[in-house]
Length: 376
Image (spheres, rainbow, N blue to C red):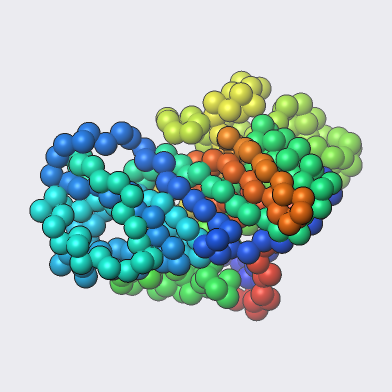
């Protein structure tokens, strides 16, 4: 299938209509802090050494490489649950075979600090992650802005936000999805982690565009009369009326694939009223497609909306479903009037981006998007 999308990086559609809130954001080691929350409690015994590591100015890939060189282990023998940004101070868990524990004395860089050690019966694998705690410093915040941030952040925490992939997913020049598309549709077997990341960037690009469409659709139904929304969307009025009755912002369609939140079994929307109720109670959340060879597709009306963003030639990765809507937890803000600095703490489920939350909060892109020519 030849995807015909505009390959300018489409601006994400915001779900909320509050006024933009001015603040200065820069992702640096002294402004951006993140701590990994493991999926399970470690056993304390076993043949795998679990390291709780604090690192600065270092990507997870670089961390794995440094540990590999220090211990003599192959990189494939070093376990991790998820990738963490280079431009941040991060705490994450790494597993290595217990037999390599003595070799850790060779870790001499001051960018890495081992905070705790324990043991576990099995190594850490990708996905063994519940979520992440964030603490982010924002500057240039007025006293009114601080109050607005606190008020609206809690509103977003209660009602949820679209689960867009953040700008970090698309490379320094925001063009990695273009390379990923070429690789994905070449039919060749992927070579190494870099090519996998590029193809994943293309998956993410398609997902973000689908999600932006659904947010825009939901916003139209929420903010316009049934008649005006019907004309704008070219939908029959009875359908728009049925969608407008749903209590939540993000409107569900028959055939949407829902997953128990924050993890659980899959079910399709057959009764919009029933699914809407569970969605508004944070028991279910709709998902979007990460297309690939084994990805499950939505059905009926929902797939009509999904199909334009489904590249059937992308078979290099297995594919998956991703939550379209998430909720922010444990929100706390602290304002320093003399320095106009605001610290915001919060928790997000795994795979979600703190910068996406900040963009919805401030109603602005945190990284300028560059213009990209359309591809055939």
